[in-house]
Image (cartoon, rainbow, N blue to C red; front, side):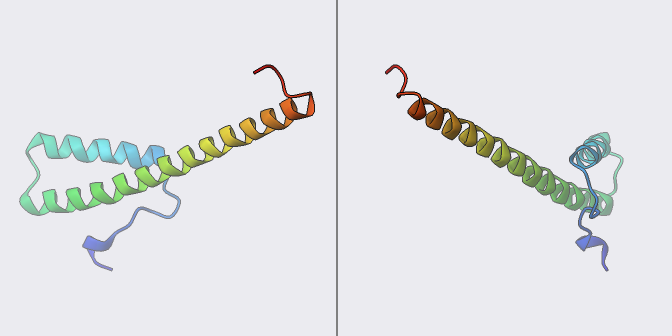
Length: 86
């Protein structure tokens, strides 16, 4: 395995990934990283940010699905009770 192809750990959490991104940003902002280290940090940061974006998208999709389920239940309840007021 090469250093350029290191994905996040399988048990990675959003919180841990976000914290690591913050560490990477602080290191890059310090100006102390060598060119090689900067390249590795940017690659790692990109992987972590993609992971976090995927997690947020999954949560957003689940929330949207819950809202749709609530809407369907409300519509079914209103239809069963005579339709409600327009």
